[in-house]
Amino acid sequence: MTDLVVRRLLIDMEAPIARHWCGGDAFRTALFNALSMSFPVGEQFFIDSVRNGFKALPADKQAQFRDEVQGFVGQEATHRRLHSLYNAHLEKLGLVNEWEPQLREQQKLLDGIDPRHHVAATAANEHFTAIMADWMLRNPDLLGTQDPRLVTLWLWHSAEESEHKSTAFDIYQALGGNHDWRIKWFKRITIVFLRGTLRQTMVNLKNDGTLWKWSTWRSAVSYLFGKRGLIRETYKPWREYLREDFHPSQQDSSRSERWLIDHSDRYTPVGTPA
Image 1 (cartoon, rainbow, N blue to C red):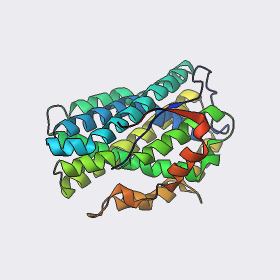
Image 2: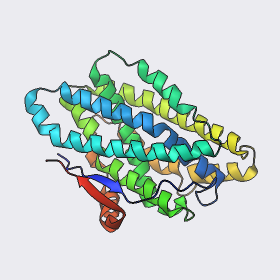
Image 3: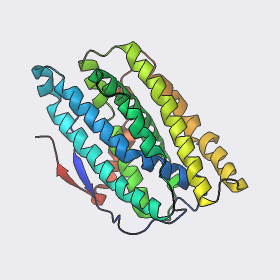
Image 4: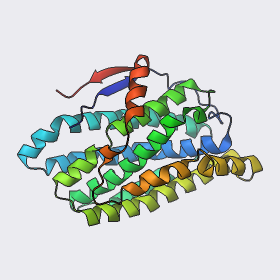
């Protein structure tokens, strides 16, 4: 089992966010902003799914998972709160969050069905965030230096996503979820996640007035497919989820552990499993 510490990040989210905070790069800023726009409603879905999956477990398995679930919920609730503050600044910049209401409508389609479906969808999303988190922790310079506060926010978020990447997966397994449905949900979430990210990034660039600039698309190609490209470097770990014997713990978490040790001055632990 995983001991998950709930942390309070020591950053000021009251100060405004620059229009191109990510190294002055319009595309990278638009992409990270798009991801943030999905987090508050997404994190709440993950919290509800894991809680309900936990409640569906027999008593002996609840005892096994109780502390880990409490830590997972605490971490995700903190992510949700900070990204809500982040998104409020984006709204002041004139950016329109079209992804969030779409996610709410999509989630309604799952109302009333077996909780294992919710947990499988959450496990798939957590795999996406975990592999992106590890990539970000390997390439922190791509966040730029213009806003150290947001650099800390994204790297701390990445470290915790890597830290709790097994929780939803393990609960799905404990609920008797099978491999076929795990893969079906993974493929569905892959489409939903990539389509939503791309669409909101385009909306952000359009609202920013940089959608049709050559520099925007040059940055996009380099950032996604270049030597250290996001898609290029995450494809292999993404694909590993399809294996029947896959478990999230098989993928390296050492960068997350190292970041949390090396940057302990940037957060305060506020709770640990009892």
